[in-house]
Length: 317
Image 1 (cartoon, rainbow, N blue to C red):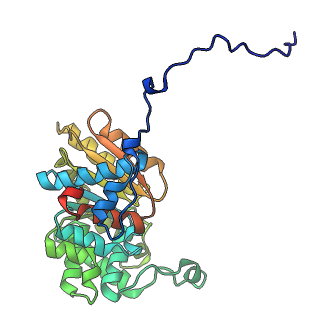
Image 2 (image 1 turned 180 degrees about the vertical axis):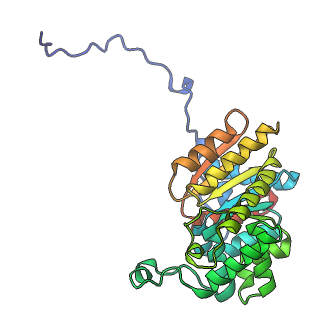
Image 3 (image 1 turned 60 degrees about the horizontal axis):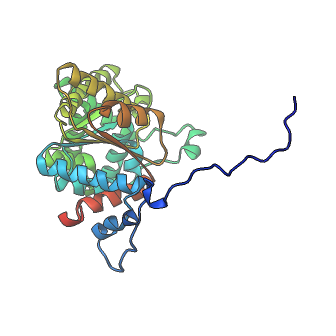
């Protein structure tokens, strides 16, 4: 049966006073124009207490509180963070006590090592792949592989081995190197490697035994670091797969041993939202016990902004 053209009767529709409604956006939460010449802290204060801006301010407070109370702040750093020039920003945070430990992947130590040695990194893959030159920088392959093999043989993890290498070389650009800063400040670095993903694995000097043993040793160091994060903060910056997976297993092991990781704050900071980071960092580890946040934006903008907010006067945190 076909329906007729018949307008719906609106005469009985019920309404209510606007002020009686619970609204999600309120004028007191709106942004305020930033004053000319104002501090970064004042800029952060001026952001609206709405959506991502509210999350950003909450993350700043959580990191500042974790530093103040000694609860710990562990940074997971992908290679993109290093090659976009953020080493000096993170080093400053290390020096100021905002970094309890760093977890990273094999590509990140390669970029950081090259920066320390020659002040440059990130080769042009499109240009180098065709002629067969990609990944074949001699010093990168020879020195890093030798350091890993020797260090792991002496009972070190990969992070300890490469920080010791960079410290011993006293390279020209050490002030831009997170590895050099970690050696100077005794900040632990763990390196989590997937075999075959890094250019140093293409070199004859690469030892699968050393890479595997060193990465497993670093995983166990990392679990100990994560297990200390009651009321602490874990940040995943620029790792889509390896570090989110490693972090989830570390949380699982800590809780297996009866460590609740209560009031843990987790943050994923990347220029796109990735499934594993969103699931394994932001959601699962904090479900029912903590808070997880996803901050979307380019590392080369967001991390300096976050760092500047952290080092602003306490009244602006």
